[in-house]
Image (tube, rainbow, N blue to C red; front, top):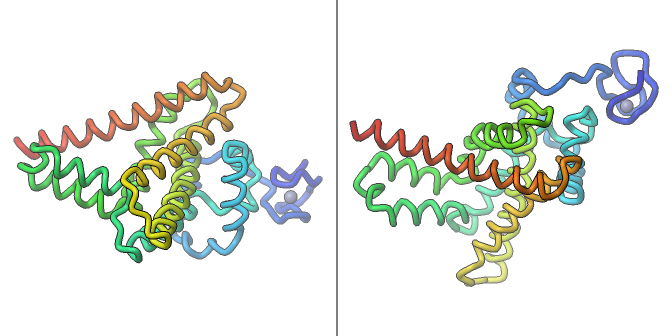
Length: 248
Ligand SMILES: [Zn+2]
């Protein structure tokens, strides 16, 4: 038997070369949930390796992780929670509303229906002020959307959760970087948030296209686009349903 992480020949329960468990299961609900109790305990291992790998070869790294090369990476839920918290701290520090926050706040202020509905505008306000955490809460929606868009490929819902958690974590780094540069460089450029948002969406496309590269670039591009549209529609549907339920 060979180690799924490093490829060494192994006989016991753990690899003598890298220390990863011999038995590597597919990712399921138990795997994701088992992370929660020690989320912030295992961040010391591999933080910079994980950050670096996901910027150099996002799709390939995610595929490696899913297929069992896991030892060197921070686990997905820890990764996204850690980096979202970092982004929230950075944004608070420079007392900026987060970029997505500005967009959502605009929605809340601009939509007259939102204005007349205190609950809806409270929800939108919360999303705007807690963008770092609301993106984590949206992970299941992203995951369902990408699962549907890429359903002919073999990944299950929890594997899609992993994919989207890593991408969201990486996007938090992009946002943090832009907020810091804006603050330090005293940048007051109207389209600055749009650039940051575009880069982060571009990153997600790159990751998905590389991850599903056997499908062909145009095919994966269109599926990623489908995932985005689906996700937007699902979240919108939830907001509309919430709005209607509240009105009744
Ligand atoms: Zn090994």
